Every structure is written in C-alpha cells, then in structure tokens.
Image (cartoon, rainbow, N blue to C red; front, side):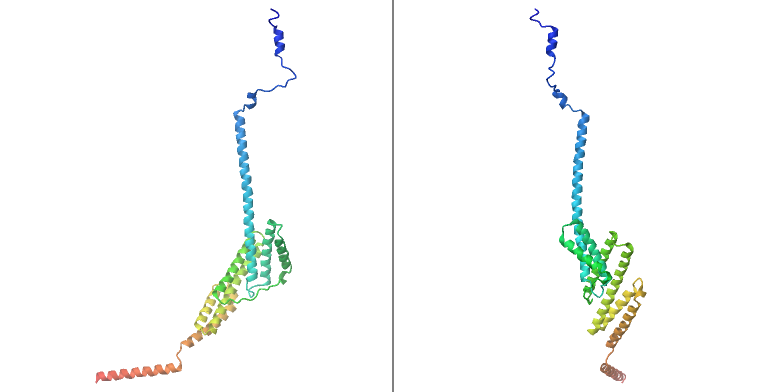
Length: 288
C-alpha cells in the first residue's frame, strides 16, 4: 500500500518547477489588447498619416513656389532689359538708365539665390554691378527713335506702362524706398506727356510737308487740348504757346486754300452778271 500510493509530500515535490527552466508567459496574456490601447494605436496611426500628408504638401508647395518665383523673376528681368534696350534715346536719361539697371540687378540676384550654380547669372550680376558702380556716368547708348506714327506712340507708351509696373513691384518688395518710387512714378507721367508732345509735333509737321494743312491743324489742336487737360498745365506753358502758334499758321493755310483765286472770282462775277441779264430780259418779256 505504501509502495503503490505515493505520499502527499512526494506529489508536491514532483509539481515544483525546475528553477533552471525559463518561465514563459501564457500566449493569451501577450496578445490581449485593451480597448484603450487599440484606440491609442489608431490615434497614433492617424496622426502619423496626417503628418506625412502635411509634410508632402509643404514640400510640393515649396517646389511650386520656387518654380513660380523663378518664372516671375525671369519675366521681370526680361521686361527691365526690354525697356532698357528699346526705350527711345531722346527720352532716356542716365538716371532712368541707372534705375532700370538696378531693378534688373535686384531680380537677377534673387534668381541666383534659387539657382546658385548658374554661371550665366553670376556673370550677369557682375556686369550689372559694374554698370551701377558708374553712377550717373552710366553709358546711355539708346539711339533716338522719332515717334512719327500712332503705332510707335503706343509701343513707347507700353514701355512706360511696363516700367510703371516694375517700379510698383520693387516698392512693394521693399527694394525701392516709397519716396523714391513716388518720384519715379511722377517722372513716368511726365515722360508720357513728353511722348505726346513729340508725337503731335511730328504728326503736324509731317502733314504740313505733305501739303495737308487740315491734318496739321487737327494734330496741333489735339496737342493743345491734351496739354491743357494735364493736372498742372502751367508746367507746359511753353509747349502750349508753341502749338498754338503752329495751329494759327496751319489754320491760315486752310483758310487760304478755301479762298477762290482771282481767275475763279472773275469767272464767277461774269456768270452772275449773265444770270442777272437773263433774269432782266425774262422779266421784260413777261411784262411786254
């Protein structure tokens, strides 16, 4: 009986774990997640997804902004260069030449910051900087280009409008001080008046050369009206008087052309006398 039935002590000893063995947790204890942990993981995943999308959005926006800025700066460089090179020499001054070069240099330097490896931009910056260093002694090589047609006047006016836009943008960017920008905008309005003065003057004189006094009179009339409508017409008193004198001469030529010649007067007089004689004869025949 003692041999067949082990004692309680022996059974207890048999159930004791071996201290050398590593204890392994139950599989159900490892895989069990509480609802709070699941919710936390979902929130973290959503946050990571939003962060990734936001970062990609910022990167794409930066690329687009950089590309947009490159296009804008290239356009501003092109416009400044166009005005600088094609503006009529009779309207270009060293001060205006210097301003255009400064505006072009500013845009080129900003573009170089976006493309630091461009050798062409570096060379352009050096060239423009050298011209600006000359100050008011900057060379003005624009050839005179007389404004003889309305199409040419519109082209020059477009250049002035382009310059107006570039000055406004430079002031908005903080490159040009506000006072300097206002002075140049006033100068542009003056140049526009000078453009019209040259156009009307050339138009009137050309008409006189072609023996078209009526067309010349119209051009001089338009000039006087245009100058009198200016905010400060007193600035152009000398030009107004000159156009009025030319208007008087053109008007005299028109009136002279309308007057009949001596031969035409004689023929007309004889014709009237003949008509009067015929009328008298008809009256006499009726009454007789």
